[in-house]
Image (tube, one colour):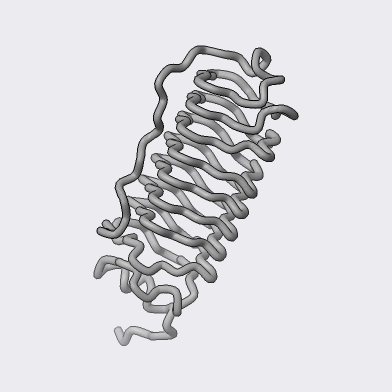
Length: 212
């Protein structure tokens, strides 16, 4: 763990009440609301989700443009093919969520947790992550381009055939992750923390051949 990184802050949720999307569809801020077992298609009014909880929600292909999210928890939600471009996440936790084909372009993450989430074929571009933790994440065929990591942790994640371009991996510990087939700019590997076994998966990036 990077000793320079501050401890991740957890969501600050004081109170929540059950609600339906129909009840709040014209509100600009959703505050202290709990939603479960519903489908969400988008709203032309809401700009902020604050101290909310979402469980088993289908967001797939929904319009989430312009929504900033803070102190919120998502469980078993589907965000597949969503565009999360140009928005921020503060003290947000995701558990068992699906982000297949999701776009994160110019997205900012602060004090966030992603646990047991599926990011296959997702796309992270020009985004920032500060005090973010990924646990058991599946990033197969995901793409990371021009990302900034500060105090970001990856635990037991799958990066099979993932691509990292113009993204410094300095002080990022991926020693418990699967790096098979990973594509990374060799000059951005400096300072990345790996295991002895993983060195064999990365040696091809330097054009080296092992004499067997």
